[in-house]
Length: 64
Image (cartoon, rainbow, N blue to C red; front, side, top):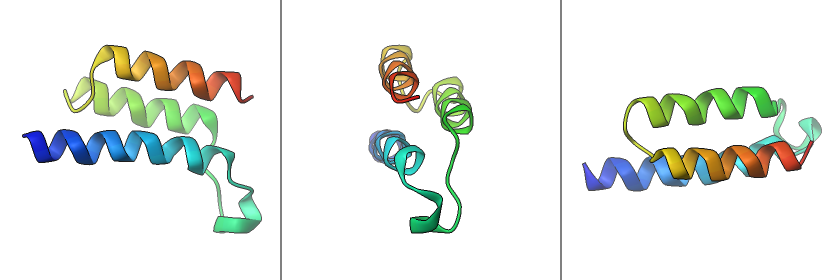
């Protein structure tokens, strides 16, 4: 379970990078809404905490 948590946290951190990457750099980019949905899924599955979800969501929303 600890390994799954590490992977989930790394994914959550990566979402911030994906959201801000220009589409031309990666072929397609993840919208902030998609990133937040994915973070919500990770939270709902217990892979990240509610506090981690809120912190990353706030960060993504500030970048809009």
